[in-house]
Amino acid sequence: IVKFSSNDVTAFEIPGRFKLVKKDLDWNFESPVKEKADGDLVKQYLTGIDNLRAVDFVPEKGTGLEKPEARLLLYGKDGKLLASLSVSAKKNNNAFIKTNDDPAIYQVYATSQDTLVKKADDFRDKKSAFAFKKDDLGEINIKTGVAEIHLTKKGNSWELVKPQDGKKVNQIQVENLI
Image (tube, rainbow, N blue to C red):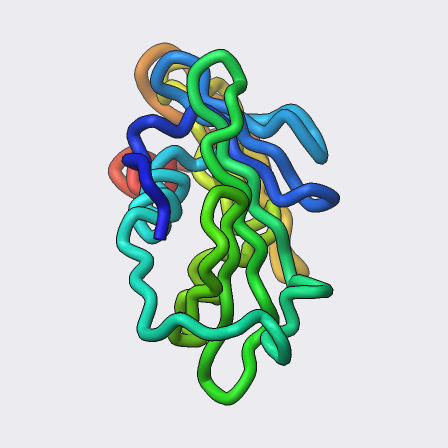
């Protein structure tokens, strides 16, 4: 359906939902907020676009493309628009796609619509919030409804501050926690 490789894409957006931009090897959100995106999920998404295949070609009437479920804009080098895809809502286990550079209306399986129509949360980097260097960690506080534990690092070992100051700490368990 698309006439380019996903490797050519340097930015893409679903207007009103999000925009992602590739800088060097990293993908980042430009909107709704500026933050790091999960590069593996972005690559998987773009590969899904590469692999889109039509099961039929149909007239536009009755496809729902007059009010598409989403519009996807894909950009290449220097911000040049590579493609604009309008994607219909699902209808009888099918969906329909129209591109800006081809008069054909592509009928695809409904799962293709799932591949294309995403929210910003689908690309958020959920790992980086917990990314840190173990050597930089100096204190751990754990609070639950049952207990509160406070550990501090002294040298290369962890010591319990709360609930019982000075109680011996199993270093292997702390390392596994981290």
